[in-house]
Amino acid sequence: MPENTTRVRRDVGLYVNDTLRDRYFAAGDALYAMGAPVRSETDVETSFGTTHVYRYGPTDPAAESRTPVVLIHGAGYCSAMWYPNTPALSGERPVYALDTPGDAGRSVHREPMWQPERAAQWMDETLDALGLDRVHLVGSSYGGWLVLNQAHRRPGRLASVTALDPGGLEKVGLRFFAWVFVSLFASFAPKALRPRLASWLEQPVIAVPELRKWVQAGARAFRIRRPAPLPLTEDALHSIRTPLYVIMGKRSLLVHPQRQLERVPRLIPGARAEIIAATGHGPQIDHPDVVNARMLSFMEEVDSLDPAASDA
Image (cartoon, rainbow, N blue to C red):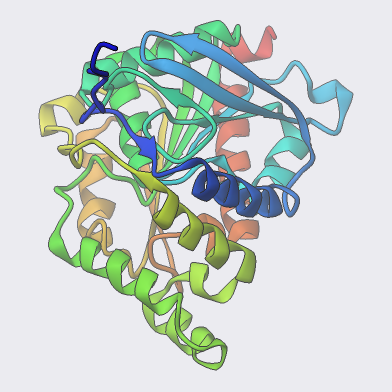
C-alpha cells in the first residue's frame, strides 16, 4: 500500500476534531436561538472555500426591498455573536450574516485569504454569489478590519460601512492579547466571581452563561492559521469614500478610542466616530439597544441621500 502523503495545511484554519466541533456548534445554536429566527441558511462557493450564510428578516414584508445589512463577525468565532443585534436589524432590513472562512463557523476553508486583496476578493465573490449588488456592511473586531479593507479595495457594492471596535486602525498590541487570555481564563472562575470579573474586564462573555460556554467551546475546538492583520495605512484610510461609522468602547484595548475619535474623521472624508461609555471591546453586546438604534439611524440617513437606495 502506498504511504499516505496528505499534509495538514499550515495556512488554513481547522477544527481539532469532530467531537469538539459538534460541541461548539451546539453551543452556538443556543446563541442563535436567543436572536432573531434564522429564515434560511445557504452555502456559497468562492475561490477560498465555502461560505456559510445566515439570512434573517425583515419582519415587515414592505422592508424586503430595502438595502440589506451584511454582518462580519470577529476573529475565532462565527455569526452566533450577533444574537443581540439580529432582532432589531432584521426588523427593519434583510440581514445576512457570513461565517468567515478561517474562523470557527460552518464555512469550509480551503485557501488562505488573510492577505488584504484576497480578503476583499472573498467578500466580493460571496456578495456576488448571494446576488447582493448594494449592502450596508457591518464588522466587529477582525470583522472591522475586513470591512475597512473592503471599503478601501473593493467599495463598489457598499452603501455604507459600520466598524465596531475594529481592527485595521492600529497595530494589535500586547495589551489586547493579554485581555483576551485573561478573559478566557476568567470564564472558568467560580460562578459567584463571574459578575465582578465581567465588570472589571469589561467582558460580557463571562456574565452570559450561553456566551461563556460558546467561547470556551470555540477555544477548544478551532485553530486559526493566519497572522494578525496589519492596520490600514493613512493613505489607504484616506482613499475611503464609502460612508463610514466607527463605534468604539470607551475602555477598548484594541484601539485607543480618544485617538481614533479625532483621527478617523480627519483621515476619511465624511466619516463619523463615536465612543460608547461603560463598555470595552463589545459595545454591540454590552449595549445592543443603543448600538442597534444608532446603526439603523446611520443606514437610514445614508439611504435617504442615495439615489440608488431610493430607486430600490
